[in-house]
Image (cartoon, rainbow, N blue to C red):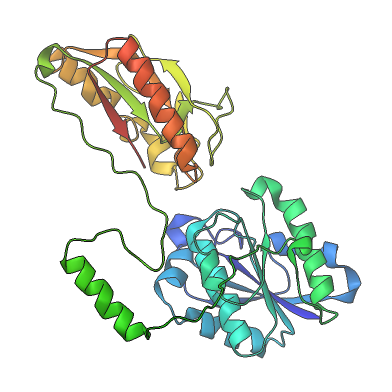
Amino acid sequence: MRIVHYVNQFYAGLGGEAEAGIGPRVLEGTVGPGRLLSQLVGEEHEIVATLVCGDDYAASHTAVGEELVGMARAAGAELLVAGPAFGSGRYGLVCARLVAAAEAVGLPAVASMHPDNPGISEAGAAPVVAAGASSRQMRPTLQAVAGAIAKLATGAKLTVADGRVARVARVGQLVDQRAAARAVELVLRRLAGDREGTEIPVGGFDVVSPSAPVDKVASATVALVTEGALVPAGNPDRLESARATRWLRYPIEGVDSLASGVWESVDGGFATTAANADPNRIVPLDTVRRLEREGVIGRLYNELLVTVGNGTQVASARRFGVEWAAELRKAGVQAAILTAT
């Protein structure tokens, strides 16, 4: 099969966030992960071209999918492969929209992204093969994609056994009332004060009631905590860049500012260049020390509590919060400043 491969600007080697606004373009042959994919699919299939578009441009131009599909067909594509996008939201969204647009015009297509990727629902009926959580799983992910390509080349459909991400099935049922009558009935129930009734229950997040203000800030002990993955340079404790399973603590007693080259953010969810140039942008230690000297706060707690929020499961984040609260309460801390990216 003649394959056209889609990657974002980063995996095409055109740049990071600074180049996320570039428009769609076609590159000859294989680029980035396409080189490994080409080896894995062997001589039976050929990646004839690579489509590239910046994440920002592609995510904000909803019609770019149709444009990219047109480019793929002009390159002679018999199969369109998008990704892998791993856990990247914008990249995953574009990959999903692209394969959906290809399927709509009869061009076979497959995308690859992590099952938790928020863009996955945009793929429609097009198949999505599960990717690892991050690019560290590039080889096994592309091995799964290569297997999917081999099966699609035979005209067969992908299944869960092939790594296809399963979707929740919609089950139809007969009801007594038409949709319009049910909608009016639900509106009347809402007007009568019913806030819970629904035909389609959806998940949600807990509502966290804010604590009362600190009465005497000038005598309070204040802690700094962050989900910005700010750690000592080199990440000696190997904090994850996404989907954290733990949190860490670092002493900051006697430290007045977070120096570049001494501290760094390992968060995989944003471009860390500016943060690493001045880590106080992530955790404002320099400012809080000034407030401490001026007597605005009583004192700063002597440890920094750190985790990463990028893709972290709600259950894990809830556990971190409970553990942090217990830790700080035990240490006599009255307030905490939580910084996020």
